[in-house]
Length: 344
Image (cartoon, rainbow, N blue to C red; front, side):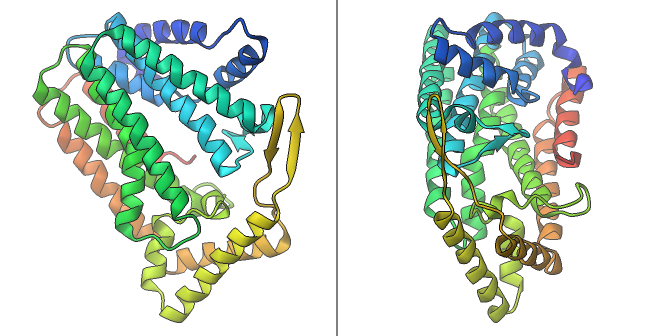
């Protein structure tokens, strides 16, 4: 990550300073939640992408930094809302916002961050960036609703890709396009970087879904998606390849998991509200998850998904073919490579 950030190290430090100021409030309850979110910030790939895209064009300006802040706020807001929808109690190995402060507070903090996103974007006075952020917010909600409507059901491969294009890939694409626009890039350059982000985001999500089933790279598989009733590409392909009777048996087990999840919801409390716990990991649920994981490995759902990930990696690489070699281009290619070789 240090190598990836090297061409924008000074600009990223400015982003961090300004973002830290945004994640504070005079409201004590809001301030506690914002500081908690800021403390749990991940690698901040999305603002890094915005700044790299701007640097690839005519350089990072204050407008680029504000764009990076707006997109990171949008991303953080979507995570706060998604964790409530998914009844998730952890994120990045720590209690999620809703687990820490309750569902009501998490939703309200997410709303605050969305409003802050609008405020910052409006002050940029750039209609193209405003349109990108507005459209991305719509895509994120649309993708989440699509995933929710298909919860526990059998997705087609096309439905799966529609979901991840509306979620992970749309946000990555927005980062690259908005960053380029903030630097005054030409339409052709903007489209090339937008395409890079879209293909990178698709490959990135495929890697996440592969890791969820793999028992080779990270030891015991997490199986967190199927625990939440989310069917992803490795399982979709295994269901397609298996004999009908076996596929139907696995589908029944998925339905049982979803039923167990609904039956095991337990209310928790905090000073700011209540939340529901996720699937309780009983011996029965654990056995079902292990059966599904073995099924995916047996029918090589991971192998197919890996081939698809490599396909999108090539598309992303091709999108940068018109750009001259430079430290920034090298960083973008390193980011692409990191996205598919990471083990977490």
